[in-house]
Length: 355
Image (cartoon, rainbow, N blue to C red):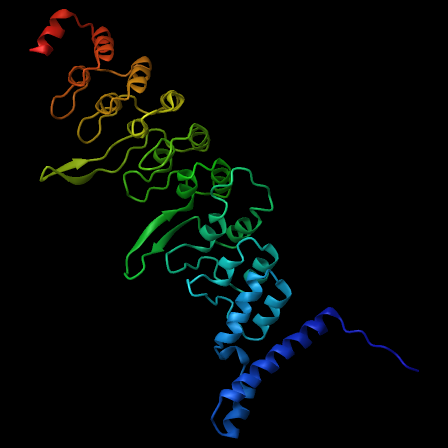
């Protein structure tokens, strides 16, 4: 009696693996110029001991094509699970939006915290294509979520190419700079440090959300960070800088100081910060308050809002410069009159300033 035997899926995989292995062994044999005894030894050693660029390239193509079955077979055939392309990107980086392939790689022991030549991590790579996408669904974040569950770090030390230097990086800060509230929420929900301080004056998450550096101010992100325990009274680190050939102390700014970096500050942020506990009259290392800083930058609506919120116009900087004098110097007559009214000034004060 004739009977047909069907191969199980596992047997099929084993057959395909053996096929890849056979082709791999054939390449080793054809390249080898050694004696037949050495050839026999080659067959006895585990195949994973041999580095084969052709096999790794075939493996990376399988990952790029999003083929989990072929990816698994090639790993079994000896491909390096952390093989890299010419840019130093690992297979797991290439699999950023291919959850089934990423799962195969993770289960095979791929390094979830690997970095490419530019210091970009696996997690950062998996999110890089989403930074400017404002509407995301759960499938878009499947791979990043799996990476974090497998130990991928949101804060890490980035390797600088060509040196031994490493700098601290927060992927949360990257999302804040791009104004992506969805990714900010995703990262915070997955235990990103909302009070991450890398030491740079402008890198505190709340400062970035208020417009520090080149980051755009974003009310919704500020609100979300504060609701999730970002420190409203945090100040930047004291440091030294050179100005006019002199070394001076700088820093100790709070979020309100950074709010004046943008020409058109969102006044809702100022109100929210003050209600949350940000010091309205914080004097930085140079004695400058948020009010005086806003005046120096001619941010008229922000100055008016800070005064409305109760900013004290009597505080001078270390040079003795006051908000009233700054308003006079900047020829901001309306603000000068408003400040005079707040401090109980009169015409005599105005005449004294004009001398």
